[in-house]
Amino acid sequence: MNGMETETKQSAKTRGKALVKAAILVGFVVLAITLIRFTPIKNYLTAEALGNFLEMAGHWAPVLYMLIYAIGVCLFLPGTLLTGLGAAIFGAYWGFLYVWIGAMLGASSAFFIGRTLGREFAASLIGDRLKKYDDAIERNGFATVLYLRLVYFPFTPMNFGMGLTKVRFKDYFFGTGLGIIVGTFIFTFFIGTLKEVWASGNWGELISFKVFFSIGLFIFSFFIPKIIKKIKGA
Image (tube, rainbow, N blue to C red; front, side, top):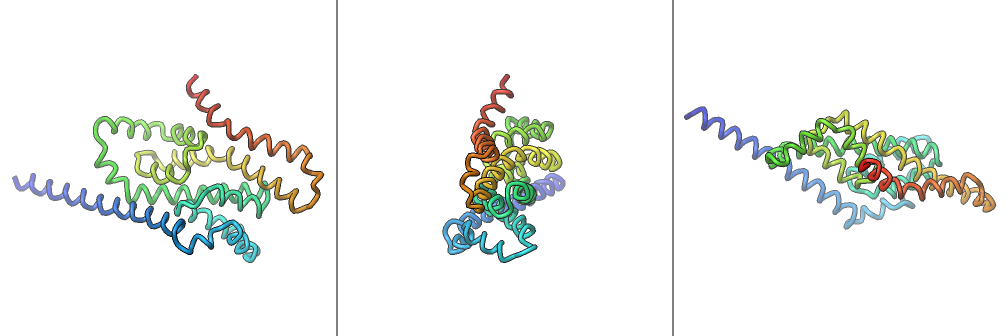
């Protein structure tokens, strides 16, 4: 009897600890969204403000940009703002590299926040019906993450959400890294190319192969999710 009471107390203690962690996670998300959307801090997170800050950073600009991107991902800053900023400041190619690294740092950080604070509580809520899906994600983690990235599943919610599942970090990391390459390159190449033309003032370059190629890639990016879904359904 004492053994059963002890086990019950330990179980209640474990559930209570998981609930506290989950409450901290929810509080973190609410606080992050509130700071970004409803406080004066949002005035410092515009493309113009961040661009001026990075221009003053000199040689440290790439490092600071990647850190800003990583933190921004965890604070639910729009990815299009951060990606477009990187392409505009650093160009199509270096911009792509810095955006990709920043996105990976942010995605990994958000995953660990979700895993540390929310996994125990999520596991306690999973019944027999949901457990098979959780187990399937663990077995097919890389393919699942890669597919969701290729069909442009919302980036930040997925980062935190995957931390709540049984997916291995290794599968999540490589699935994310490979899955965001195409979309990231297309968007940074498009923005970076147009910025180069704008900066040069040579408007004749608007009819160059590079510009048309970047526009074509950008348009093609909107069809990627449909193509992937059609291939998967075949």
